[in-house]
Length: 299
Ligand code: G1P
Image (tube, rainbow, N blue to C red; front, side):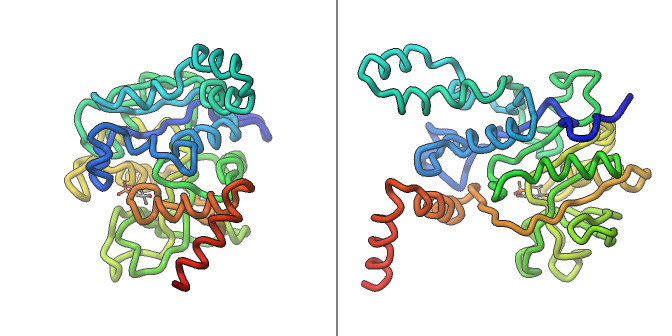
């Protein structure tokens, strides 16, 4: 199978695992999936869908669980609401409402049981065409800023082949929240060859401080590896363990070290930071919020 031509997106499908219970956001997540919580006014999953579309993805495969139909519904046609808004002369709102639906084709695949991130990605297998040699995975809890790292990762796959992940350099005391890479430098300071990967190691056992940050460009060989792993950290089937298995078997894996910002929407503290960060940049609400925050912090 041929590699994608340089400059052309090497993937058509982007998998977004969104089957979790959202326990850290209970009680809200009794009724509202955490992926739909708004970052100012736009659900986190729309930001991630826009990032995937910008990088050339044509289809978003949302891995969902029973009871989370609202996530797919969010991307469905909204022409009735658009008509109503247009009749009221609210063209700006029509554009906002239409955006999610027009971004990208959305398909949902169901993960019946919460068996881990590796299992969730495996659920997307049948929805990825046999001619698609690589696909992206975007974890909707992670906002990687500024966007565009997937394009950089695609360039690295063009050059080195195999699979490419996004890494952040994190403080060692925080490392056990992540999948962690054992790396070797290349001639590009921001690209490292990966020799091993371990999920949620103790700080003194972590092979580096380079952590996986929720963006993956995976060769479809990962599906075969996912079939062969055993439950790992937390008793779950870990994507990290499938990637580690591929590395042991000679599959080239590289990381792009992202030096920008990152938000973790997966817990209330990280989510609130993201909302404040985006709101401060919003021309309409930013200035007042800034003044209020300054007064609140001094008060
Ligand atoms: C998942 C991955 C982990 C990665 C992290 C990034 O962990 O398993 O390798 O570093 O996302 O956010 P989770 O946050 O689901 O525990």
